[in-house]
Length: 176
Image (cartoon, rainbow, N blue to C red; front, side, top):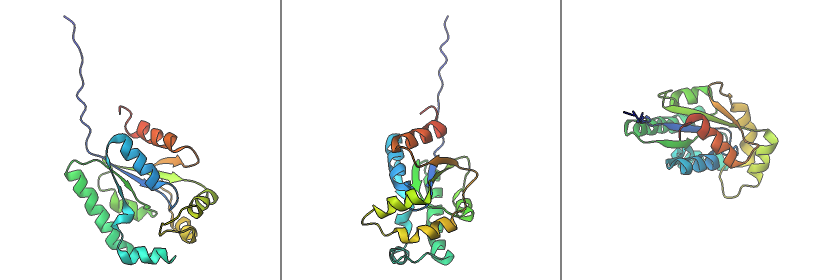
């Protein structure tokens, strides 16, 4: 008699949080990654209040008080997605360690991807972007605020999008 080993693999729901400064490719990479996984993509920018968006459009950096309701809304969404067994890719700047700690409600199921690149590369990208409220005016403040994570999958953005997406998939979902 020949025995056939079959594995039933059920992955726990997962949130992949793609972080970095504005212009690092969070939305582009996040959307491509979500599409490749057949997951839903969400952009943390859509959780900002109209007042926050207007401040950023005017080149005014947000204060901690401005960010607090935004972070609360994001944390609530992450908890809801996990409780509902929903996989998501979430693009979010999450520049400070305290913000990431607040959003990492379950370190086993919320995975952090840090997209990094040089100031010059990202500035060039921002200058070529049109119809987006975040201009290159705020890039210096973004880099000044950035507390680089030590507990994230770190991805250099100076490579093709497809290579970045594949590196994320191969690391987080090696069987997928």
